[in-house]
Length: 416
Image (cartoon, rainbow, N blue to C red):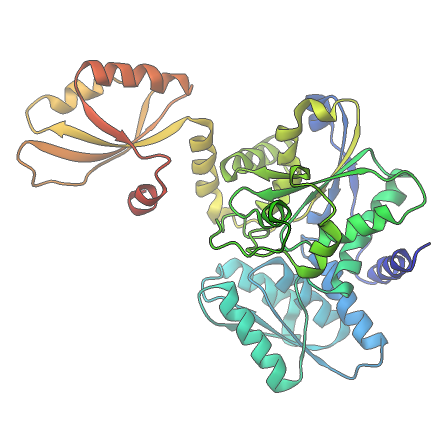
């Protein structure tokens, strides 16, 4: 056994102080759909509903085992890392301080407080992660507290790699394929090192990132670590602008094509499917590996596949947004700016053009003082995406002027 695998085994054994190994479940629905053996590694079933507890616990355990007298720790996080950190602090009886953006949802603040209890203080600062990260670093420097990084540290990587050890033991061997979600790269690099240093047959590894935050894929394409100038933060558990330096050292041997990109709208479809059909509550990042099946398709036929379900910390207040994104991705909901003539009967003429399965979801005048035309924000839902094509033909034939703003991000963010 290599030194890394030995350290991972030590970390995994120590984790049993906190919780039993997470289940590896054969999912009948996905297996039948993709004609493969699809296993889910349910990291959403840890005490904090994500794998992040593994790395945070291992970091603190090793600091304490090494004779470090530090009794105060800190971290910066707006989500799963904060909750794992808080749980570990309470377990070890350590003082902890979590720096979170002011914009953090109250649900995540409350859960972090519950997991940490009296051992953890929460400080809200700044609007973005970079702001609270800088505040945490300053606090660590001033107070002597040990800062627990979310992914870019050897002890964190070792802790996350314990996922692979459990999979190997539970399955009795390594699968043909493992699909790993990627944010900062702690989990993906840890699993990669663990399986590559084994003596048996290593599985094929594929990675999946949010389409709006492809930090690993972009870095592989350019051959260097890249910090993205802009990201879509919807997949908050994996929307990282810059892959970790240490993880990238391990992952740099992969091709850009080994990193799949999950469109945020399609990811919402996957979340709703797993909730409605399987009763599994997933956060956006937790659905990444399952969603990758839609990209792989026939490539998984007949294979044994393990998908790492990385987290289930979903705030149901976000459910309307998830449904909205899913409908728009499927082409079942669109938004328009419609120029309607300011004459009697114009609205009736427009409504008569709608099909029997077209539903007006939003209707709002944007310019009420116009003399000849009124601009209207119009939202339509339908049961078949093809219905919009025939609607457009009828609108064009009757001379209606309209603009589809569904994919116009600036207009959509401003008006929708």
